[in-house]
Length: 322
Ligand SMILES: [Zn+2]
Image 1 (cartoon, rainbow, N blue to C red):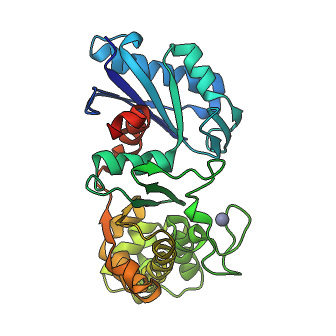
Image 2 (image 1 turned 90 degrees about the vertical axis):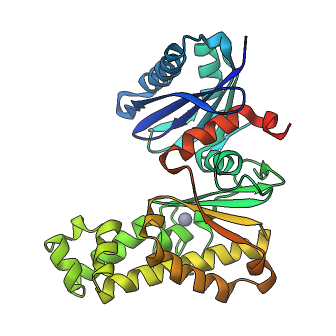
C-alpha cells in the first residue's frame, strides 16, 4: 500500500535522502557522495541508489512511495521539472523529473533547495504555528524562501525568493551574479571571510593574524568569531558590518512582506550574538515600526536536515494542507 514519501536533498558534494511515513515522520535516511565530477549519469545513479537504500532498510519497494520530492540548486522550472543551471553539479538543462520518473516509476516534484528548506521549517521546524514566513539561509551565499498562506511564493517562473541578490549597497563588492553590492556580496559567509582576509592582508587584525598563522587562506567564519570573542576589535567590526547589512536586507523583506516570522538558518548564524545583536539593531533602525513589531525572528530548528526534511515536505505537497 502506498503510504510513504521520499525526499532527496541534492547538493554539490552529497545527496541526502529520507524516507518518511504518511505524516512526514522520517523513518530512514541515507547519505551518499554526489560524485558530480563523474557526470550526470553517475549522479542520477547515486540518487536512485539512495532511494533504494532507504526503502530496503524498511523492507519496502518503490511501489510503496506516493511521491518523490527533490530539493535542488537552481535556477529551475518546478512545473516541467527541469534544472536549468547548477554550477556545483556541472548541470545545464537537466530534465530531472522525467529522468527520475523513468528510472524509479515514482512521481517526482522538483523544488528549489532554499524553498524546500523553507517548507521544512514551516511544517516540521520553527514555523509550525505561522502561515506567513520568510526563511533565510546565510552560508556561502544567501538563499531564501517566501511562504504566503502556507505556500511557497514562486513568482511567474520560479524566480521569487532570490533574496541573496537584492541590492543592499550600490557600487559595493562584486557578487557571483555579476552585479555589485548584492545581499550575499556583503553579508554571506563568503563576504565575511573576504573581510577577514583583507584585514589580515592589510596587517590590521593582530589576533586574526595570530590565529591564522598569518595565512589569509586560513581565515574563516569560525576563526573570525573566535578572534572577536577574544576581544579582537577588527574581527568584531567584521561581524558588526555583516550584521548591519543582514539587518538592512531583513528590513527590506519585512517592509515588503510583513511576515509573522523570519527564520534564519545557515552556518553563519552559528556566530550567534556576534551577528544577531548588530542585525537586530540594524533591523529595528531600518524596518517600519508596525512590520518590526509584529515579526518574530527565530533560528532554524532542523539543522543539517533542513534540506532533506524540506524535500519530504515538497513530496507531501498539498497533503500538508489537509
Ligand atoms: Zn548578486
